[in-house]
Image (cartoon, rainbow over all chains, first blue to last red; front, side, top):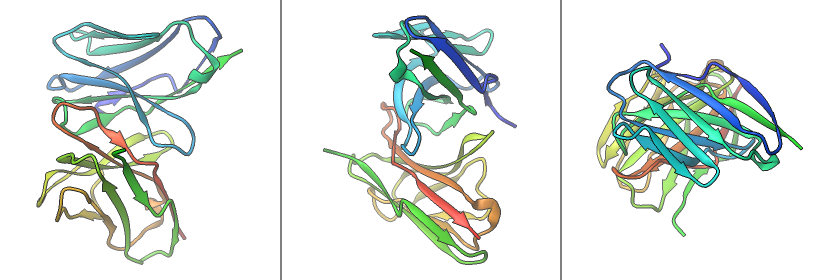
Length: 112
Length: 111
């Protein structure tokens, strides 16, 4: 059974607006979470991470929020740019460097 | 620059053949992982290794094997290729305090 879930296969957003991508997990032992971005025919590239001792982490236009009680995290991109159009994967592990479990991905399209 | 490379990038093989996909990293990372990407399933963990001579099964390990004889390489072997193993395969590496870095992927088609 999928331990990490992304229930929205796709999302379209206007350029300049906020993109919100969501992720849920079931395993309470997960304590390290990451977001990866993937373009076609390329490997996933790391975007941002958060450990369970925090509830928010920011890096430029990207912010990840973690709600441990709800086993939910989200990625906010503000403002969204056309170059952000890609598939975004949420991942979780029992700690940095441990094996990662990925969600099914959300395809983001930013409309110019 | 340190990197992680996969070879071949594309492979077509016949059902029943043994196939090995190579993964080589120059990050000097202890941890290495193999994933497959399929529509509707995202990235699923096949096998992983935390160091030389260490290997572990992931979520979808049936029909696959790995061995780790040095830090740099983690080859993935399909013992007897099946059409259900047609997929895009990604190798990744990390250390204990880093995120995982991924290779460019190998597209495998089993006919």
